[in-house]
Amino acid sequence: MSISAQDVRVLREKTGTGIMDCKKALTDTNGDLEKAIKFLREKGLADSKKRSGREAREGIITIVYSGGRDTASMVEVNCETDFVSRTDQYQDFVRNIAQIILDKGAEDAKNLPEDVNNMVKEAIATFGENITVRKVAQFNKIDMNRSVFHSYIHLGGKVGVIVEFLLDNGDSIDNEHFQQFAKNTALQIASMGPFGVLRDDFPKEVVDEQREIFIKQAKESGKPEKIIEKIITGKMVKFFAETSLLEQKFVKNNDITVGQYLKETEKKVDGKIEIKRFVRFKLGEE
Image (cartoon, rainbow, N blue to C red; front, side):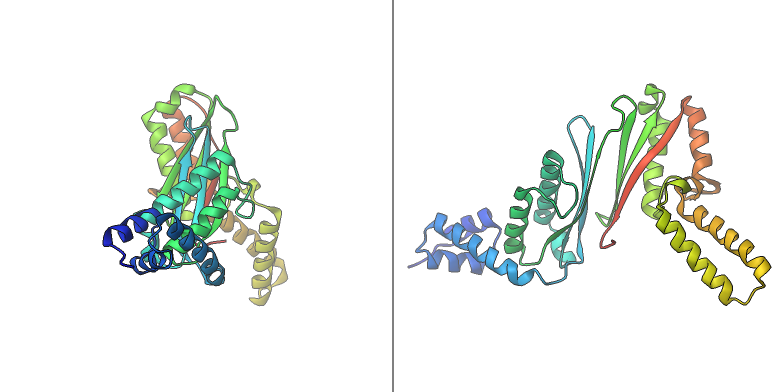
């Protein structure tokens, strides 16, 4: 039977599948649109199993908020090519995934709502690439009266940051100095990738591992034992200065640390500001 271009266009709009696949689906189902949609979905699920082993390194990171901005969710959804990740269709798909996770919750990328798993399977068929939800983070306000979220997406979705602040002075929320500080803090985290707000926030295993590396380096240097401990201490101080947010040099003014910038801002807003926590995703990073 003859398949019209109009029928192909309608099927393509409904499924997002390529022209030739739409034409074949309509031909194999004698032009029945509903059967053709089902045919393509079934084919997509079969093809997705073949694609599941293919590496997905590209993609985007997206952040969404609840209506009252009491909850913030960030997701990283990977695909195989940068070409696909830059399409409006893919970006809408990722935003929809993030919204479902925001609404239904997810502890991590291994425990996703069934709706999300089904959407991923359909997307694999639509885009013709392996697609995976790599990482998920969700913050609920620690203090409904004092908490404020700020987020930042860098490089078109290659890096994403959510920061939660606690403010003693409620009027600080709309203060221009706080707003600028919040924006700059998120930018700092995106650019410099600190491990924690304070050195005390670092997991013990991270600190122990870094110390072991410095011990090995110091011993291999052939330095006398009596100064090795001083060398290690000095290296640990530098390590914390580079990886603890409040100890890092402020990216917009290397003459001060982020901690000093925080103190300056507190004076301007006449209230205490605490950087309570943050999460940072970088595309493809563990």
